[in-house]
Image (cartoon, rainbow, N blue to C red; front, side, top):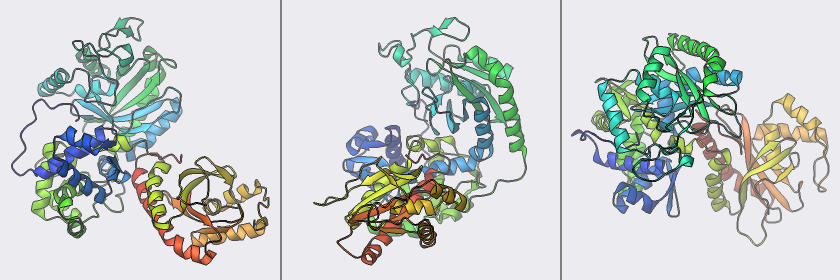
Length: 581
């Protein structure tokens, strides 16, 4: 967890020090929002600059971080760590569809949350798009007392858990260790105020009365009420106006594995109205989820674990980067990726086999990760914990497709010295959603947001070729094929044949059909389901080379850039919705 530890045990003798220090850098970058100046990471971790540089070099090699000037930036590849935990838990895969149906039925946001120490962490969100809507992300951590699920989980706490909760509140009186929630006011600090949901800010509750905004004051009584009722109410515990009701989901052994929350706003429903309006349908959904968990049929395993970077890859990285490659960090993170669907709990032998690590090396990595709280063990089997999501998942949860593509387009432009862009279909047009221009005296001047007809553009033809046949036919029937230059194809039969060829070739080259002197070549970008969701292109002046020379020069690096974008999109899209713009 991110709040200050009050009684952290010393590391075991077998713990790997460089791995522990390296993970502190990754945590600092994650809690800093995903982008931090390297100097700030040095100050936050207390490590030497040379150590931080080596860690960042290793993380960049793994595809988890990019270094842009003086800043370190989390990269989409880091999501594979959180994906491994989420897949191993099976909760988003098995219970997510029922949560989505509940959100549609109630027209309210629905969350799945799991206990994480004395906190609550979100593992699935089915949100409604409104001016005032849920802003939490998968991976966000809340104090148990500030939300409906926490009272449900705390009903099973023993005295040690309650002691740790009290110590945490004393050590972190403003909830500064939980950046996902507005801070509470420390009554002794003089900071904060109503806009910060301060502890001395009294507000009206669901019964028309007023109470203090410190959600911990009555937490024990709320826990007892939740234990008795079997559900828990959040009456503006996080911030004024936000209300929720939660019910636990239990496994076949009657253990609560997660909680389902329906979240609304007082402008739609008062807290006192939630039980009547929501609880019957919510309980039906929970019963459906519990039947799903009781199904003995195992889920279909992933095609392969994320742990495909074996010892040979790490040896090559070590040889290439030398002392700038922290091998123990790479091994530790590789160990986390051994888990996944159908691999929720693994013995040491299976982890070593999946990662290609020596048994002794894997054991030390597992012991270190268990000490840090990223793994739990019963003495034989290891399983990932929700704390794995602390490693950048929430910070990366808001990624859009253009943000994923931008660094890869920049690399492409450095290779070919011509402009590169990404576009999506918008009606009968394409719309530019990402672009990296090149620096030339004469260059193609197009900005993000620009729209062109799809039919005379390379990206448009790639996108049209990727549509199902019936949808493509309907699209073309709505399109007026106007000649924009003397080269523009305006014959429906000719255009249909060209689109069929683009589908077979996997690229489109358009020469001076949109504008005289403009030539471009484009390839598709496909999502996890192999659907064409975008196109990327290189645009250039037609007078520099022949079409064949441009195709030979541009197509290989263009396809390589699209493949890198697709790899990041597959990782990001495993449990997240990645919007196209």
